[in-house]
Length: 224
Ligand SMILES: C[S@@+](CC[C@H](N)C(=O)[O-])C[C@H]1O[C@@H](n2cnc3c(N)ncnc32)[C@H](O)[C@@H]1O
Image (cartoon, rainbow, N blue to C red; front, side, top):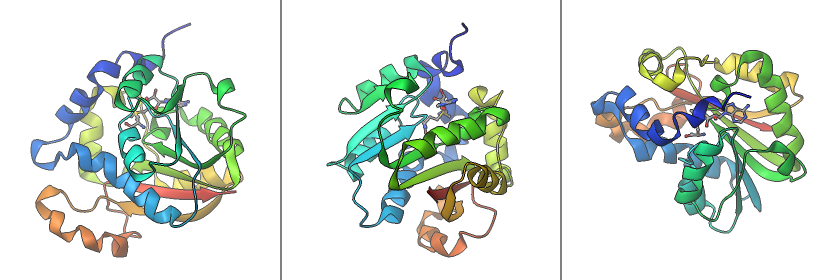
């Protein structure tokens, strides 16, 4: 059997990502943190005893999840064992798995999939989302974050990134249809990352811009 694609990128993942993003726009920590911060905000006062980072890769979101949800069990699943080794170093308390059978019986209050679905071939996306749906607790919420293919800067970064060579971005509309086909309800969705670092002082306006399809990424919040 061939190795999972991301095993070959695990060690160089952060460097490759950094090199694909123009220096003036790169905010490594912010890109990882904003997703977790938004997820925490959208979950509000819903208690989350257990969170799954689906497609956690080398664990870029896990330290943020650790900070925002210090009392929550953190789980990570990825098809790339080499990436999980790095994730384990970053967040030792996270329970990490590359075999879905070991995770399938657990029910999660929240699941985050950050930039994962564009790496899953379109015919397999429905099955991957169905896995997440089945793993949600009855009141559970799932958060998909994806690149917005309508944003020209996102497109440029995507084209420069070696590990995106075989990936296929999906629009917010496609993500919505995928969710509907998996029997999930859309709680909220919207575009994010409108203002690059030089305009960071305008970021407080982002919640008012969620419907405008120009942000660099988008999120979809789903429930059963
Ligand atoms: C661009 S990386 C994102 C990693 C991490 N979520 C982050 O934000 O840094 C995409 C990840 O999706 C994983 N992946 C690809 N297909 C998958 C699948 N069917 N199920 C779970 N993870 C998958 C890859 O192994 C890779 O680690």
